[in-house]
Amino acid sequence: MSPNPQWDVPRALGVAKLFHLVCGVRDACVTPFLTLYLRHLGVAAPWVGILMGTKHLVAACWTPFCAFLAKRYQKRRMFLTGSLLGSAGASLLMVLVPPVDRSLNNHFCNGSNKVVTTVLPLGVTRTVTMTSSQGSVPNHWAGAPSLPGSRHTRALDTSGFPNGSGKNQERILRALQAYFAGSVEGARITTQALHPVTSGLRANSQEGTFEVDNATLGTLPRSAALGSPDNLSKAQGDDQALDHSSKGPQWTFILSLGFVAFWELLTAPLEQVADDSLFEYLDFVDAADRNRNLWMWRLLGMSAGVCGIAALVGHLECFLVTNGPRGVIHFYSYALFSTLALAVSTAFPVPIYQQQGLSYKPIKALSLIRGDSRLILLAFTVFWIGATASTVQNFLFWHMKDHGSSELVMGFSVALGLLGEVLFHPFRTSLLRKLSRVGVLGLGLSCLALQLLYYSFTWSWWSVLPVQILSAISSGALWWAVGTSLEDLATSGVERSLSTMFRGHFYESGCSLGSFVGGFVVMRFSIAVLYQACCVVLLLWLAVFLATQPRLPQEQRINYSKLLALEGSDSSDSEQGSERDWLVKAMREDHVDWKG
Image (cartoon, rainbow, N blue to C red; front, side, top):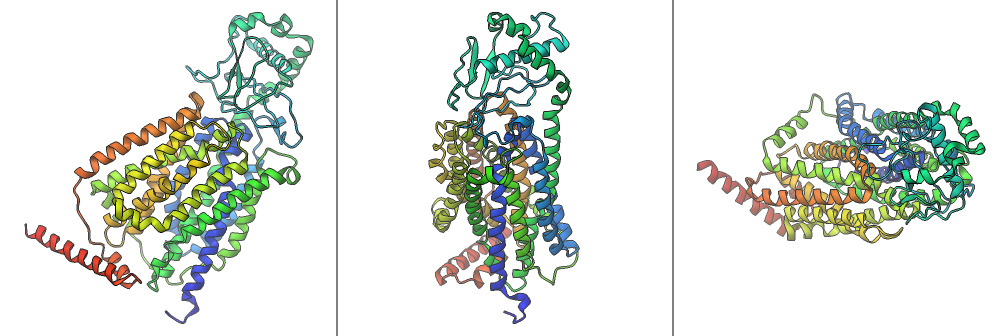
């Protein structure tokens, strides 16, 4: 090793571990809870799906472009600093997004136990939504346009009302909602079922709404149907606010979409630029294999951060934040740890020597995928993994919230999965040796499908926790098998480009599609149906994968860079001997095929 302190490998690895640890805590402050915060704002499930789908799409397209620019113009330090500073500022923009119903700002802090009615604009499903300090009531529909054929909530039919046109209809609807609000004042609300205390109301336990049929309208008191003095005066007072309220959900969605996209533009390049910088730094002194386990530090940081921020929100938010929707402390914490990561990044290893000229490795990787049917099959597999995993990232916390889970329980469920991956990692080699990469891939897909099916039958606030241990296989072992497959199928020099393309393009594209579709499935059906559908999709693809894989040409490439790394590593003589035997065997087979 050179005595030049520029190539102090132990120090570089120590700084990289600390950087990944802090970035893991930073990401855990917001990423798992972002969709839950959007729900607190009143954003409906389909719009949450669009927001998250856009976020993944930006990451898939923008990250490789920024990584190319940073390397081409030798501006990696600038990209690291700019990404951390910019993402810290952009995250605080989310605090400025107004909720759909401003009266719900931090109602959990003042112990409000009253029934809240939300008057929605024309063309929007009319629901009576109830909230309680004991737990929030699911509101997947708030602000969502009603869709034809929807079976969960039905807009009130006002065609039979007297003077049933224009503003009169809206007055009657608001008076009706005010009547229902007064009728159910003080009713006990649970997350298992809503108990209507007014004859003719049908409770929807999945969506937390009351539905009213036409028969009920005929049995209502005349003062409710035509408007009692109190209710009509309230309705008349709301007439002026109708135009503004009709823009509420749309305005919240537009601001959220713009801020999330802008935030992702600034955040996305960080991890890729840092990984490329560290790899080239270590590769210059032939120590590139020593950064293989840095991902553990990020997972450890996320495990600590997701539990810590959940505990902070649950116990201190009412003291720290007295105004605004619930969850804004997530973004303040994110900005704080971004600043801390910025301080660590000043010592992050960025090589002074960088290769000049354009790199064509991404193009080579794309050509390799196009010419190899096994890589094409693996690409589709990663795509479907992303599509189904995104539904867990987006709506599992919604599902847990519907069953009374606190944010601390949600954070603990994420930490269980992440720690399971870390603890299961020592068994990686033996598992791959016993089952082969195809077997481990099939096992991982099966466990992911089983998890999704289990989620659909969640029955209590704690019931998600036991199944989270399967994440060690459904996430950890699954990606080990994908990584091993890419190493076996890649040609020399394109392993990293191939891995980046699978994780950055195919997986993120799958997450984007899953988010777009998942939100509408939740609105049209339910979260349970979404998870059941994803389970079926994964099992069908698993059948296709297992049926197709043996029929593809089984061609073994010689990865000389991998063999050289093994030669210089501290592996045992027996392992080195087996690798040399494999090389001799492969070269003989290659020679026989060439002669044939």
